[in-house]
Image (cartoon, rainbow, N blue to C red; front, side, top):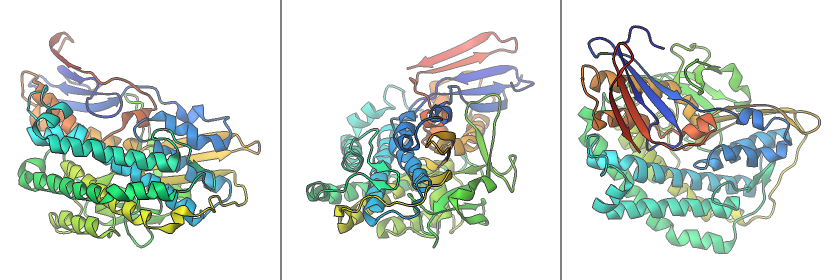
Length: 480
């Protein structure tokens, strides 16, 4: 507990995010912010649940920790199990089917977050009435945007179904490859709608760009701070969401490390545990826990890569980087713009893959010499995802370590909460719903998946309690 505080404000749980979290804000006798924290309050368990299970079950088991981004865990675990069965390179059909599955996941996830969760804040303002500030409000005033969001998410989910077997908790990826290819009928079904999807992607990029540029003076300081950035890149520096080497840059764009093989991640990344949260705090070992924390996700990926290999997303990336003259952009609310650049990139990659005849290939699984240990890294929609396993001679998992995307963003989200609290809550005698939403807007920019980070599920009502120096409740606000 923070020392020296006179009042405590609680936001529990945070709304319009995936999962269950709580915010505590401690105020001194002058109502100035003394401390602010984002707590993850639920049990973390999957790293133990999979121990003792056969390694080939893991790609299916671990995706149960989340219903929002199961594909990311499914594929990251499958990549690790590829190494366990001695496969360093998949067949072309196996590799491209997995990539199509992954871009379908990124497409639906980014569309869900932007249109359903974040757009009410952007369209109606942070202080808009809560009854209006939701997807129903968006549907009432911007029906075309609401329909686009629904249809784009549906398209991505159908891509997942065709590649993974099911929209949620599929079984498509297996150790060493994939269990099906894409039929001509499935391909033609997706090709029929891809031009419309790309048109809507262009519109979404424009909405996010125009909003950011037009409100730059307000958004630049909102929950923002300089930070390191970490993401996968291809060996030539290109953005790659499925595979590659890890790169870390500082707030000015200087390389901290580059070309890191996923198998060596423990030489570069460590995790700290704090007694007030179930979510760990990763950091870059060479810098240390105090200054080695970093951001992941769309903002970090666009900042860290040298280019994007699809033309329209690359043009959008250059427009984005021009705002900061090519230097890393450290504006927290810029996550939304970069997320829409990635939405466009995912659409372009899906179109590119659908024209690739390797998707109809029949060589689905590669084989190799068995290994006892493996790690894998993948860029999930919310950021860099680490899976690490050890397997004994009886094929049982003996150790599992997961560093989930939202876990990587734990320290930045805490800093965003504190920055917004200091700028908007300090000195305010009464809690308003709009002020609370300012805190949530900053958290929402990261698109956190607290279910993934804590491996638990829950509802998301919101309660804020203001206490005096003696601990008595002087104000309370609650929403559902």
